[in-house]
Image (cartoon, rainbow, N blue to C red; front, top):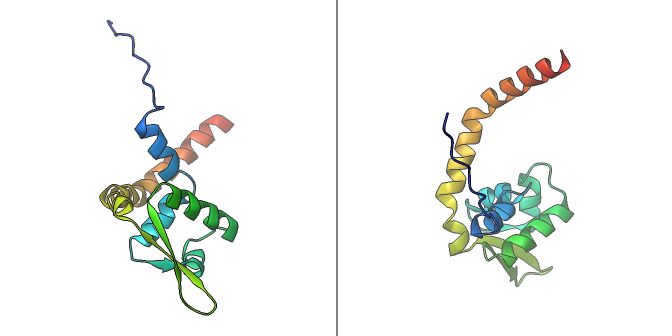
Length: 123
């Protein structure tokens, strides 16, 4: 069999940089929620199941730093903060929705495969 040697691909390129952000534990879930429209911090904390307030703060700051999310302090008493996807963040919508839909559709098969693998490893 004649197989050519694979060339090493450097992912210190845009792909790895972007996947490091949107592929972390919470960014994808936060962005999917913000696709429904702007949301205040406390509302996000309630709807993103399992996220701590500290982790939500870190996630939102990182998304804001990357220009995917905007932060607006509302002139209320006490002040509240609202987050929204920027045009750059919205440009990811079709890719993120496709990934979400794929995960929902295929999670049962993945779980079945995990159980089968674990059973083989235990045997």
